[in-house]
Image (cartoon, rainbow over all chains, first blue to last red; front, side):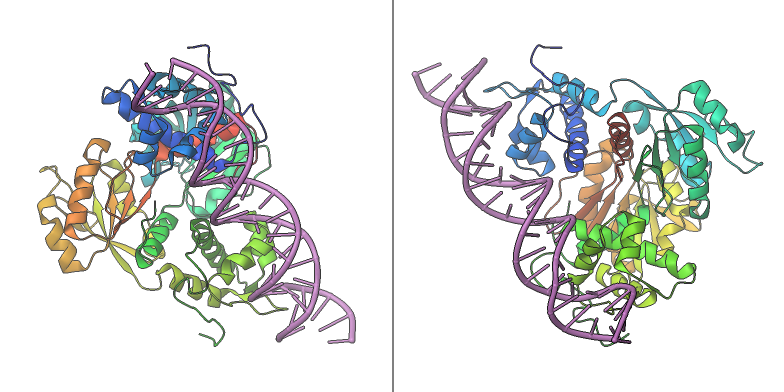
Amino acid sequence: MNGKSENPSDGGRDGPVPKAVVSRLSLYLRELQHLVRDGHETTSSTQLGNVLGFTDAQVRKDLAYFGQFGYPGIGYRCEELIQAIKQILGTNQPWPVAMIGAGNLGRALLRYKGFVQQGFRIVAVFDNDPDKAGQEIEGRAVEPLERLAEVVREQGIRLAILAVPAPAAQEVADMLVEAGIDGLLNFAPVTIALPGTVSTVGVDLAIELEQLAFAVVNRKKSS
Amino acid sequence: MNGKSENPSDGGRDGPVPKAVVSRLSLYLRELQHLVRDGHETTSSTQLGNVLGFTDAQVRKDLAYFGQFGYPGIGYRCEELIQAIKQILGTNQPWPVAMIGAGNLGRALLRYKGFVQQGFRIVAVFDNDPDKAGQEIEGRAVEPLERLAEVVREQGIRLAILAVPAPAAQEVADMLVEAGIDGLLNFAPVTIALPGTVSTVGVDLAIELEQLAFAVVNRKKSS
DNA sequence: TAGATTGTTAATCGATTAACAATC
DNA sequence: TAGATTGTTAATCGATTAACAATC
């Protein structure tokens, strides 16, 4: 896009990139997309920091892990930085995703528009319930779990969203690993044990409310 | 419950409690509840750490922020520690919660059992859509947003879950603050600006998938 | 040129880990 | 008693912030 960025794709520079940096990267991306929608061509570390509640130094430091994206005296060109961050995160290309579990949460997530907007397409849905397998939800046929390995291979699926009841989660996760999945977004309120070759991100909705309750009881401007 | 814990309720000891510590507290609680269900009476920092992927020292240090809950040579009594953590988090008493937005996600969350299990009851649902206001969902009447302040007062609601489209989020958040809410769990993919007296926790589902994609592309046992 | 803003280094701050006396 | 495990201190490690020369 321009000749400036040095290590566009990976965490080039030094050691491994801290997890906290990567999560802020997603926030920068989201904010940049809002800025573009509002007609901004460029932004600055100060502006990004102000909106998101970080210092300007932190914004610059975070981005500097991955290369040089800014222009002294000018700031960052929004579109350019968006592309750079997408490349770093790996979302410059679309990811086909499998949804496991067609209950309340799974169905709601199937209809959620935000995934597609960020480059994730849920291309297959699985459920063990024979009443559900065979049905069609949001234009996708619900498949039985037996078809997992086959569909994962056929469609080149690497990521799965786990939206099954807690007691089933570990067992289904094992099947996903067996089927060759590389990453798991787990909505079940349990810690899943997985081989080191598979990544997990866990989202526990009740825990998020607990964190909020604590913040309220202890009065502070949490984030 | 016993005579040991010194600072049962708040972050007594030194300064403010690090956010990371509080989030691990919720994980300890979740795991302890699983242990009790599996018939364990006691556990240890080593066991908790192993399951959750932390060091034993970290588990002990985290708990030590809030008091002395363990027994040298024995470990922690699960039930006792569960009660202590609930008290710290503020979930030893039930919280009435308002849901704002009765779309896909809002309705799925209304049916989600995990909230009640951890002490959160969604006692009111609001939506601006006149088609929805008046309807009944999961036994709760959907109210128009005009009734917000009134219902919040009547029911003593302090927490709200925001499940409205991104463009409406800030505006609705302002109404919630106006209505006297103390904490906001925000599912809209935007950063909400709020007065320092109100706490927010943001959950962006697309961002969680982005983090997973990054972890997969950069192969490492994320958490 | 003057003003703005970057990338980066050094200084500060905070969080994690290792080690161990005290305890059951 | 011997073995297990805590709470806590000191040492290590990592992350954030402040400051500033370089750049547009």
